[in-house]
Length: 459
Image 1 (tube, one colour):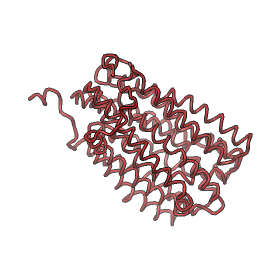
Image 2 (cartoon, one colour):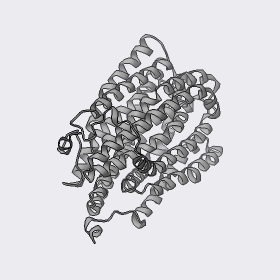
Image 3 (cartoon, one colour):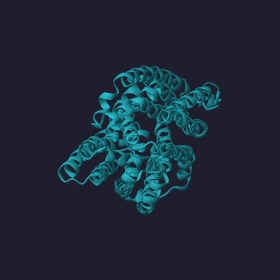
Image 4 (cartoon, helix red, strand yellow):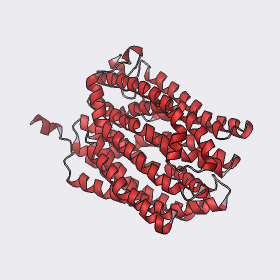
């Protein structure tokens, strides 16, 4: 690898977050990351809009019914990408370029092997998995079709998320955005061709997403292989380094474990929600798609502060880290308040993009008026947990996420749904966010997670 080229600022679009204004660097990193996240979310959102408008609410519900199941099976491994980002960001902050290269090769190799196994298991198991979450009979066939095609391309989904973790670790949020911009355009065009022109239904949107994700993986792989990249992966690097794998797994398992258990909790909640019928299911998936965009600024800040924390931990600059966290919390609070107000009063505007059925719109507004005021809590948890993870302490955020799900959301959904119906399920999400934010705030203030300064380490 050309180390001198790698050391040049911006060789791969990376941002050195260990110098300059903390908030300026966080925003500089966050803007393309936010745009990239929006484009990535457009994959499934466009699927939902197209089938909702051209096929009907039954197809919309079918696309959404498979979500919790797929998330369960891929969420653990996607959590490992968090460990990848931490290792990469700390190595980049310490300017340890050989470690960057070896870590990237290790995680890419593991991703390919795991993705192939998951694809082989997920396709035949799809009907059984959908039955376990109480999928209504009238959408079962379409749900199975969508899920099986999704599993056929699960390797591409996993690879791109792993590549994204690598890019983010070196402070490069621009490259993934550019790849996603092209692949998202491909996805939209294919959605319209396969569904509106060829009438393939849910199979059409599934194939469109698969092919678009394949394109994004190809773009990312070629970009990482460039000689100018600090990582510069080539074929001989696709091997496993046991020490680095151990470090990635140690940092990533808590997030993966949390993701998996949260997905199980979400499946339980989805099972309760499915009992209220297709209208509620369709409304819920529409809200989730809109919600994913509206909460994205806060989630993006959580990802950005994790990279910021990782680089400044590697550079031993804790005071700079604290300044960055304070500024990010203020900006996130203002943004979440504005978004919450819009959805609470005018959430029906984006809902009508997904459906023409008034009953679905009204059911969606019921959820918005319950969860939107609590976006602030979700933002606080994301930023504080991202900070602690980036500093190399992922266990407490994992415990908070798991306990708030199984001691908060799941019991609340099961209990409240008996008295106030589907709204009880919606309230369980707000309760979960509040518990997460409160617990994480206490740990951030009083916990033993802070990195030491360079002067302290020298002593």
